[in-house]
Image (cartoon, helix red, strand yellow):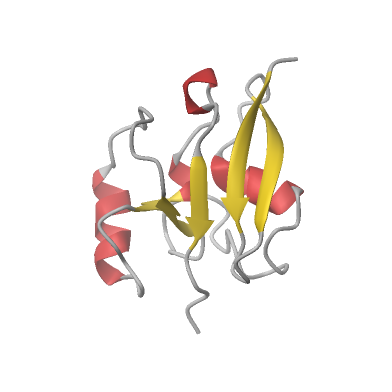
Length: 111
């Protein structure tokens, strides 16, 4: 098993350094959920299909190579609240070795 380290800042502003497995075909939203860094039912509402923006996060260190945004992700972010230039949907970011050291902050929950 190959794990990488990712820093996730939760919606209360607390930073969590977590281990994320690269060999389980997980995405960043699933890592957030597995560590319970957001209340149940407030992140990944659509199940990771880029059909809601509940898993929006801000990429804090942009030197990491992330996959390009899909048209679906761009469309969803166009409709989301609290969008910044570094916003991404965490469900669209697969956990790979290239993300070791990634730092993200969860966007505020849209109500």
